Amino acid sequence: MRIGYDAKRAFYNRSGLGNYSRDLIRLLMQFYPENEYFLYTPKTRDSIHFVDEEKVSIVSPQKASRLTQAYWRSCQLKDQLLKDKINLYHGLSNELPKDIHKSMIKSIVTIHDLIFLRHPEWYPAIDRFIYKKKFSYSCKIADAILAISQQTRNDLLDYFQIDERKIEVIYQGCNHVFKHFLPDNEKEKIKEKWKLPDEYILYVGTIEERKNLLSVIKSLHLGKINIPLVVVGKQTKYYKKVKDYIDKHAVKHIYFLREVSVTELPGIYQMASLFIYPSVFEGFGIPILEALYSRVPVITSKGSCFKEAGGESSIYINPMDVEEMIHAIQNVLKDDELRKNMADRGYEYARQFSDEQIAKKVILLYDRLCNE
Image (cartoon, rainbow, N blue to C red; front, side, top):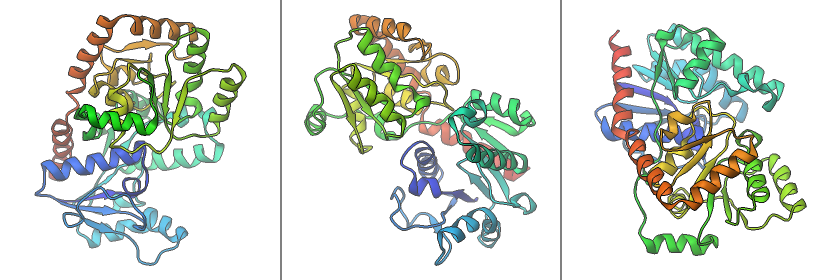
């Protein structure tokens, strides 16, 4: 097969959509090298290097401005796909090129979440308008829709009234670096570089309202929980709200780490006593899986997709109930046997999200579409 991918996020996004795109492309190339892979990106300058360029074709417009790059990706890409004789095109980040359904090229779109519809208060009106237009159009014209969780599948049925036979749920995995334990000397170097404490609770994720870091800070302060919190994530305007609370209440031992490399992050997970992920809503929740692979006990939120990612061994709480969060944190930290049991069972659960299984399910979907 000659398979094309929307690779803009893979080359330029260092978080969720970029991680998903890079990991899926990588593992399909690893397990199915007989296919030809074409990565379409509106630009290539200063991009993230994640594949051997001799094994893929990277395609972008020539001498394009920012405006014409966007136009090429949305409106001209179909013609490029036909020129390259692509059999199947996979939109990895919620959208497909205009009129691809009018070609002979089979198409799949991955939908990560519909949070902008479920929680419109978190998004500017113009963003909601654009997202709804792009997502609904792509779902309508796609030959198949890949949902990353049952929660996303249910939201697609609720908000877009899509034929459920078009939707395939295939969970995403996490970067392979989280599946290997670092030797003690490497972890010690990471600890020294970032000046980490001997014991800490870990939070990984963008510091934005939806991910609800402030509730963790409040829990540690009001519960008088005397263990440091390490926060890894990009800061947004919400960070000021968090910092104002810390300053007002003189909350101590909060470590904010920025620009942590993907090679260092596994060590930071593996040295943590507890991982907490109090997000209000997600499409899947990859940091939960990263923590489980790192054999770290997880406290996360009730509802949404969280149990799909966290399995039976994680503890689930109302993320807005500070008292419930305090109780859960205290219970895990004071009980060594519980913590070990959660870590061991969580690791076994995480192993079902193996690269080989994910690659196999995706390639079977590709084969089925191309043979219809």
